[in-house]
Length: 324
Ligand code: PPE
Image (cartoon, rainbow, N blue to C red; front, side, top):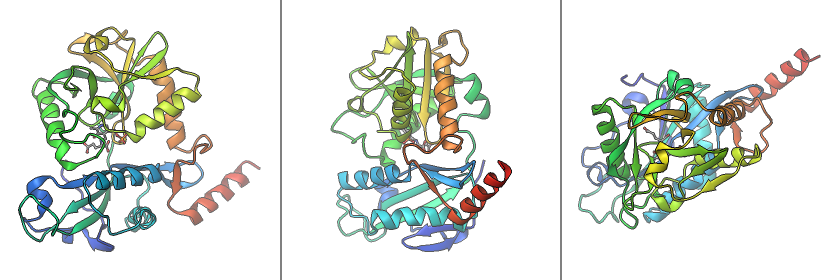
């Protein structure tokens, strides 16, 4: 689906029209992948109107990514968060996906980027279910990728760098070419790492497993949310190295990510996961996650940033009236 035009995109502190949000072909990041980005969702909540999910944590990760690449963001984290809120409001969005990008801009080419400016843009658009609406309930068919995730001390996995996504593209295209929805990549030691755009969780005998940060994974914000929610629901959640063959003998598997949310995996390399249906723990975790992002349960961890506080106050008032 091509982009539907949105009203405004934020570029270096100013709102510009969709049609004017352009850069030069000699931009450093276009040649060398010198960009760091985020993917953030804003959800309509029950009583507070649209609220951005885990804005603080996404902001922190973006600034961490920039720090790893020695890039000074010319805005404070507070200014950045305010800009994200404004982007949602300027586009009059309710549900949307935010895509901030910090990148080495236009000045000169050559790998050494010091003279290139650090530019910051934030766009937002409406993005439906990443792996399809069906997938949320029925799960996806995936393969183990023949591509590994990047080796440690090559491309830093903890930085959400545009360059890392060349590896993701290989994983995803290979999966698509063979008729799978997604690929699961192993790390260079052969341990399970992650999907092209999702972290992965496994369930066996009631316990939940996910690869540790040392297995070349992105430190997913959804991953963190699921670990937190899972533990609070009373499950044991274990971060540990996972050998490939564990994928074929577990009861349940699911992906997590901002775009993918919580998506069950139905088969891996044509081997059925569990009984081939969304497992009970996956469903339980999914239900809690969707209730949280939809504001149907109290925001006990302070993960929601309401975009329109006045509207939120009005909605709360109406809810109180309705409740008598
Ligand atoms: N691993 C990778 C490689 C990844 O790209 C993502 C997010 C995750 C894990 C999950 O991280 P988090 O969103 O913080 O829970 N992928 C983003 C981009 C997907 C895209 O196709 O673009 C996303 O989900 O926004």
